[in-house]
Image (tube, rainbow, N blue to C red; front, side, top):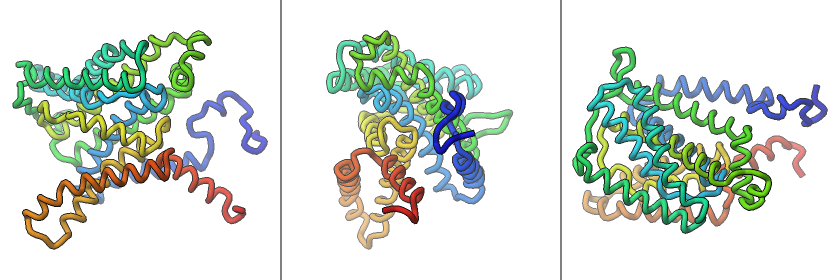
Length: 345
């Protein structure tokens, strides 16, 4: 029995979903995800798959930057490692997609651990610059190695599941979305463990964490590895989704995209990486639709195309000025309002 909101056991305190209301909403969300592909058209299925891939990668970056406090601009490079791993294994070895995705995560994890070695000595802007250097090196390797197909890249066949070819957005939805949900649940559970709490301690005060007995290098490398694993799996899903992988598929701007997603959504929050990835994916699409509706010639549309990027950047900057804690904080504020309504003062 509970007294108010107090928890009477450690099991209750550690529960991921500790109220009946949360479980009901979780069930409704699961039903909505299952029903969505049955009612959506090809365009919305495409967006749903792309959002799920971005959510998975943003979740990985949030582990590193939001929870551990290590800034990285190499998320696109780690996704590229995962995508190329899947493409090479699929085209050269013909291995099952599940094994390919696991290998993609492990290869990216290895790359993340190597990149994370300087994190014991440098942090902040200097660490971000070192991850940019890793991105430049990865791009060079992607473009020049024979294994990766050089600048032409690699094309791969669709994934197959028990003989069924996953060659449409509808079929890929049932692979990408459930896997993204499992990755989110894994990250949410991570921060209820000793490892996740060590990450948070390092973020809040790394020197104090070391004094308390937390080995900084081990946990920082572990954070880099987990973040890169998520990025590698997301990159593998990206490869199966688009079925063409080139060095230009994972530019530095993509890393900035994911960093902006967790900032806009709310760093250090699983909900934040979901909302941020959804926001960052949908706003350009909405701007594209608005530009497409304007009565103008094709040339005018091309001229106006960069304006979408400017408007997009202005939205992010304005959002950060007026709500620096992200969309997750806005959602929590709305929940508190309706929790107290109609007795709000």
